[in-house]
Image (cartoon, rainbow, N blue to C red; front, side):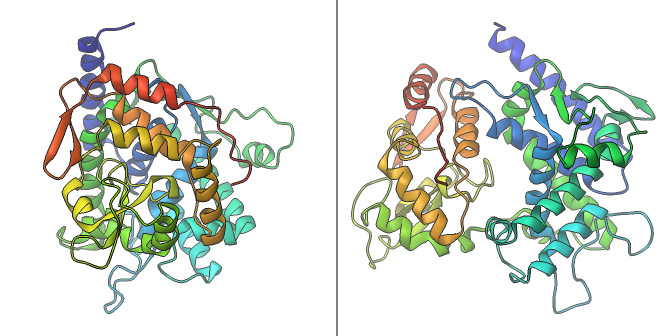
Length: 391
């Protein structure tokens, strides 16, 4: 097992290479930002209860992740002006990136409303969503994945290995998508140590990639940067009010953190909180949502919660217990995805990579110091084989 200092050196080395890629990579569209974020997200979501991230992901997983990332970008930026859906392609004048166009068409054809959450739309229009994933997956295979690791005309496979090149044919991929016999290998194999480094670098790389992506879109559309980043990557927390009532009932009308009664009085009003903070990982899956007092939610802010809260939250997400059955019922009734496996993976990645001495929010203005060994025990004790067939 490598030492912490060796791991840190590997992560810093990878960060340096990604910075070079962001600075010098030649892309007319914003795909490189989306692919980098998507790979990082899948590493977080796939982390085990022991803190080990996945060694590989698939093009199918990445395609669905890019739809999630681009989904909020396919609504009008300024409906009262001539600026509708922002262009994300710097090529031909007034052209749009193909992936964004495909997602926009799916959104419009679904007739679910401009601001409908993806979690609901894809459940209500499952067949159309599968066809959309097929299109996005092919586009990823055809262009950004073979080209992402090229800098100044030279390929440096420092992130991942794939089994195809630029000459991949559509019929090969289509055959695989139709579940026929074929020789297409859809795996994206991370280079040694890369998935571990991506999870460790999440807090640093995510805001940087958001910033670079924002600058690119601002440049393409001739817009000032101000306000644009909030539009592209801002929180969708207002939408979560749709599940506040059922979650409050499941918590027996008590704040998740202090366990006192929720009510109409100031500071005691119920609010939906993201247990893993939005700033750490933007995830609206039902498993990540709890109801808290207005005051507790305000004081917790973007801090990670302390051990006791983690233990309670992990118990709530155990598939074999009543709390999860209640969440499954809410999920079905509200057409809202649980995403239990993904968000527990993210929690494992975030908490099990914390250094000793990191501060975790307990209550009010009180914090406790993170003890890595204790956190490992908590996640180990909470691990069970997932069984979400009822989802």
